[in-house]
Length: 499
Figure 1 (tube, rainbow, N blue to C red):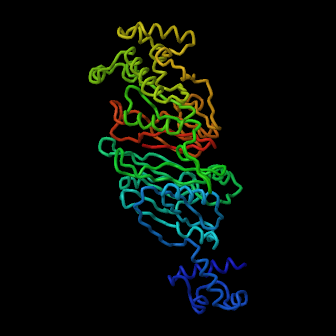
Figure 2 (figure 1 turned 90 degrees about the horizontal axis):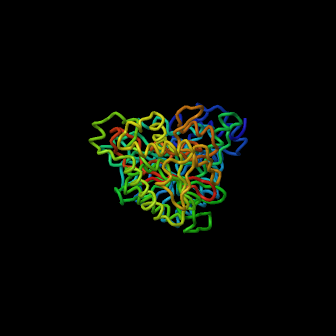
Figure 3 (figure 1 turned 90 degrees about the vertical axis):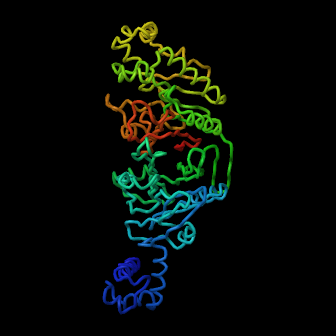
């Protein structure tokens, strides 16, 4: 038995009979576990004991509801857990970030499963920021709330699809930073629906087990930024902030607890799948602005061309080809190559570009392997040339993408920048299986892939979205696509940037 056990027992009695913050000595005698004479011997008097317990009640999340309403254009959201110390440098860096950007900081306060409380010192520092729910006056269809998700929950976004019909954005507290796109109706919903978990400022003491070790590896000091944007549609757009090695990087700026640097360069910008010539002009413009704003040293490109002219999925869909006026391969390569060089690379003069081997590139190989090019009178001559290029191990479309600042990578090449693997598109999985975010998460310490068009953060694997149009001839009405790129910062942290 110790003082903490007595205090917790007293708090349980208060909660049990709904007396609020205190009960009398006679009531505790009836419901409590310990003798009041023992308590008075330890604390001197019953009043001294009640006063100490009151401090613990203040600094315990308990069943409190702390709801705030905001109309600020920038909101920063992180989490804190009862019973644990906090990373004060991370907190101070977030405070500095908010001061510089006129943002509001909110800390979602979460009950711990160890029945402990925040220390009085920590509580006093956090008290101005503590909430359990936030209401955004400018946009009603956002859910920001503590939903009692366990800090040991492996995926804090599980089952949130059941809530998404009522919300465009859902943000929940967690020591892990996850993100995914929730299903939405691409024909009727104006924007994609997303779910995020915050990261934390708490220093969690994880158990020395396999489960605890995994939780420790995925623990993320950081927050989610909501920034009000009316360029495309008046709404809040989210992106993640990660604290590492004394800094938080956001776009082209660096923040510490007492410093701020602007207009710095980033190591790499990874673009969502391009799919020229089916690209979104809006998304391409935003991507170019991001590359130049961040002075990106390198830019990673996925699925640069759709290759619809030889798409094996539509090889015998003659009605579809007529309806969508399918071009020849020569026309598609020429248009897409010119867009790649003139509309993208030339607009970003300070960056080196890498073209990642992607699944749409393999459309050519399948087309040649099947001998389809021989029967294709519009593409037969070019097909013969590509056949020879393949036999000589040359890139079959190199003439259309050749540029001084463009490097084409084969599927066997490896590209790692600041500890992040960037050379996998995401279509190839383990032992010949289809790729998915979990297989890459098992294989690489940190990586960024594309392919699915559905941006995601899953532990240490990030998936970029797409820079194509969201409604194409082969897409379904029900979707999880979204326009998104990723940034690799100088300290190796990754930031997902949605439009």
